[in-house]
Length: 321
Image (cartoon, rainbow, N blue to C red; front, top):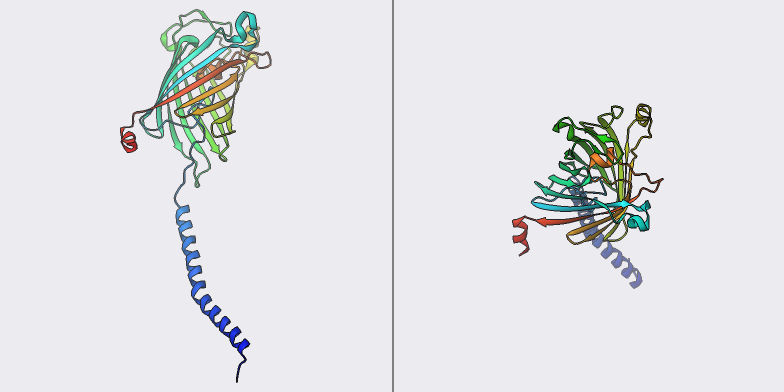
């Protein structure tokens, strides 16, 4: 049978196409299978989430973040007086202030130790924080454990911010302790949220109607506006019994839940945190158990935290050279 030239051309094209398909399709299928195997293999390896928060502190309280090994954080925390204290009398609170100086050192990338001194009740504090679990493609949350201790060094018989008189019979009555589970999730590059179940123990309280053991639950988060600016918020609810105090003393319960809002500004090795809060305390003993300010009454304090990180990692310095 004689084929016309046009039909020959069609058959030749179909033949060539068939040959190409026979060579290319198996190759493509093999490549797809190889890529699938690689993806499956990579998915078996955990990819950890980084920078859930900008710093180891959110506002008053801690975040799940720790300090890198052989790095030192130096914290300066400042709380001015109440904004509602007037312009002439107190320049909206700027005429007075409470301050805390603190240090944090990374023993490992997951474990830090910290210490500080607050002018409020002349308190010294020690704490440690360890990152137990990390968020990854295998696990949805980061969990960090925190334990702390503080000593109040005021002379016995001083008047607290609540108006009560505090008397100590021995040094151990000046101690307080706390423990926290810091649980956070970074949902995307902008949003991170954290929950903070907390236990606080005070060896001495100002009135028998106030329990020595206090449970609290905190909520916090941040929303990243730009590469360097972040909105942050924090709330701690203390499971106290105001009625027992009011029945015992005939006075209104002096303490409130701590509520804070602010903004973080990151500039290289520094983190600036500017905020408004109803608590002048900067450690768990004070802002969870002894917040006397009320947002409803205008007892709002402007404050800031400044963190500066120093590296003592000689290996990292040598790598940079």
